[in-house]
Image 1: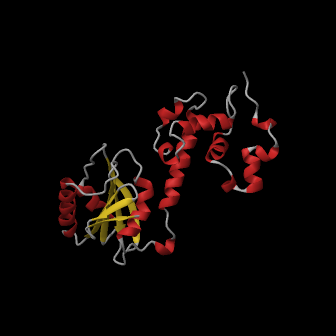
Image 2: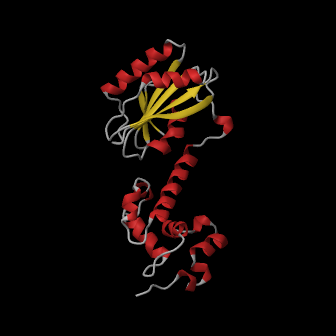
Length: 230
């Protein structure tokens, strides 16, 4: 049986028209997702399809953000185009949350690092390691993912990180990686790699300023040797 098309709804009930008239904040998560999906199927409206998508994450956006394309495409009515649109939306959200104004690109505290990188890393199901490159004034002059690993660890190539810092004429490096478990406390391997990178960078007069581990709304700073919230 065919569902009632959104086009037949009263104008103030249609997600796109509601957004234009009342603003995006007036829409539910399901309505916003329906706009992103653009259309439904012969059996379901875009709203019904959006409900199906939200259901796989228990209605939580943070859980939906961690879903992979294959899981989304398993939902009847979600093909490659709709799945990639959802994934792209969440990636844009992560990048927006991690973006900081140009006049705040001076990195002086571990909290700045955590707020910059936390939105990108805290909900990943695997470990990623990033290097932030700074000049002598602690201004951020570049950042790059240097490794991506499994569920519990990632191996960094110290020579590659130091080379990238030298190529950028960096004076300092801040290493950042996540713990998918949500617990930011460092393990023995974290400390070993930190010490090795510090020694290697020092040969080129480059300082390892900090190593920040991102957890679930918490982070650990080697420079501060303390766990804090971001």
